[in-house]
Image 1 (cartoon, rainbow, N blue to C red):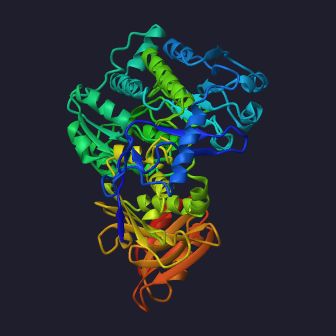
Image 2: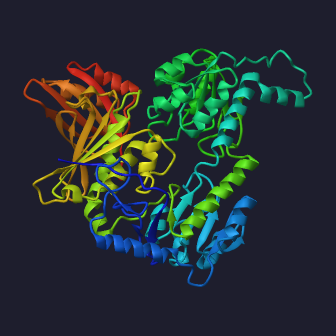
Image 3: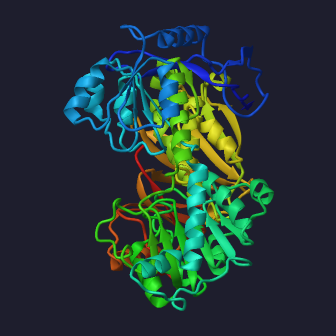
Length: 617
């Protein structure tokens, strides 16, 4: 068995892109074998890379980087700024090439103008879809999104046409935290409602009596950058801060004077709640009827994260019942909100997604995106890249069938974690290549599977290690030589230092452990969970049931699913031995509700139940 560990790459790496319309991004110029100009020593550290398979790959990567750094074939680079950008950013871009500030372009005008452009800077209104890349005919090398979201950029088309996409993910942090504090104070003291009353000619000092924040407990749900900054400021108001985030580190929380707790403890303890989490399948409708029922009467809710994290109809019911005394919402689903009953309520404060809307934040975003675009035009690669460069083409071709498997195993493992989280990630590859196996792409996909449900950052081969380290994860990779001829027989993913909401997922080392392989060419299957051998297609909604191996359980579970109108796509049962323990895996068409889970738990012989969501990578 060979233990592989990785040394962090210092600074930004070079990478190369060909300019043909079907060219994907080429290899990085700082390969796994080199760190800041020095040869990488094996077993030296933990993050980033192992040597490329051959010196030929290194030479190719160096050459690709040189090609990318070359100027536009028609002279200085031309940068189109298609939406308003802060003056500091525009001034910076002017030092890198010719800047064309053309706002409010129609689609036809954009398609015409893009033909002579090397980079385009946009915000949220401009759609850079496949037709834009087709019209650019390979000249467009960089798309810069001044902000976080990249829903308006076709990333697949960008990669296909050799175009790098960068964003500005950090500049809005302080502004969003400040807006959260503004809503917190306004909600506590009824500022918005009292202002509206006075504008109607009233002088009502009784109706709008508020509550003090001193000594109250604020639960920060999602303890990332914005959540941390809001917590820091709320402590200055005399509040006690607790936080729920399964992936936050105890060390960081302690440094801010914050106690990490489970979701149930947060719901039962706090008087105020502030949400700072991305919208993912895990967080969608996190605050629903069940969650509101666990809160103290008179709770107050602030959301500057994403619409959809709160179930609107459930919040209406909680407000009507007096469980929630008031809410302050900056985000909605969809935006702008259409016929949303919360908008017109006097006990709800609404703002039109102003979290990032300060002059300072706009200028900082402009500077951040300008730096990213200029660096990309020079051939530099930083963590704000949202579409990954390729590894060596021959490596990608060999590993392509295992990309979905690596991502699926990471997704499955993290969904089996209980609320207190984890710190250690163990990835084991079974391959006849031994230490010659280039694991960068697979490692990135495992990390992507783990983190994509808990972060708004796009996780890819470029930033996976950095994001994992920022989350406090300790990553260990091991390659176990195998006898087969395939480049990879299977992958094991284990999470240590964690409790599981499905105890059967624990292996002999007390880690949450899943393993898998590919079948029929590229179909990912889970072949092991904990100590149980299984055969589970990693796609869609999957229900796991641990049971005693005895007659009638399959029928009982099937009956409960049928009663609740749950359609089954497949069912497999894996047992240790006759009459011993067994795991039933059931593919269903939709995520099982709490009611369905409770019903299955009551079937005689069932010992534990959970579910997780997979998707096609």
